[in-house]
Image 1 (cartoon, rainbow, N blue to C red):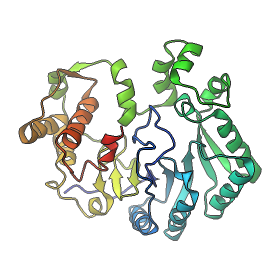
Image 2 (image 1 turned 90 degrees about the horizontal axis):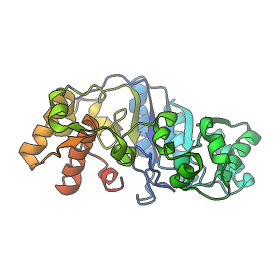
Image 3 (image 1 turned 180 degrees about the vertical axis):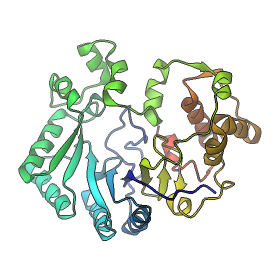
Image 4 (image 1 turned 90 degrees about the vertical axis):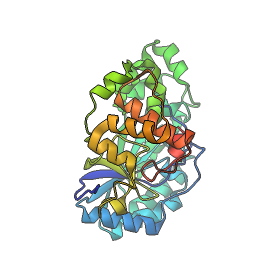
Length: 325
């Protein structure tokens, strides 16, 4: 069985719908997603399981959680009922209109146990969101004594060097700071190259022959990680660093059936070689000659199974992750 008995820290994805389609987004959020939010009943189930597994606090992320703040409030109330603390809510500040309206929302969040916002400060988000919104939201937080977790202040001077009243493309940043600027961003940001981030940076990554990757295959030890996991609005447990790969949390805590989760099981037991053999033998997958490492190969196989073969495998959920990447 695939089973987890203990969890330490992670996040809850309340929605995948987002105001932007950032090139670095691990979870492939975008305006193309349905505007679904986590329900109160789903939140109760998720938080009660997390509490039993030893997880006492989570962060809230998306998508953009605060596009419809009234839909976040029931989730926060559920967390309080289940004695789960909220470390912070991640936000890109796109919802900021003016200080008075932002202050009202912030006070409602604080009533429900939220005392910190992680506010995105980076060129990826600035392609969609004018910097004045970030500045305005930070000022509003200061007014109500809401803590701010800026991610990342290292980019403040970069964004502030351009007109803060409008968005700016990454090409504009490259013209301002040099052609190597885009290549430098992942390290400066601490970027996890999965999902849309992998798509963005794959052309710049060193490639390896398929056979060499398979030869180095080993069981993937990230899948049962107890740190930095996520649980989404559909109840999917998403392992650390592996967006687009999931098992229902309610099944994983009891012991999930390996036959029902062929992708997850093969990666955990035999690594990328096991998954490649499964995809080739069962579904006619033909590998390319080279990939940017095992994770690139893994993602290519999973995309093939979901998009080209039209499979609705329970461990490759939500399928829209692959459609909107």
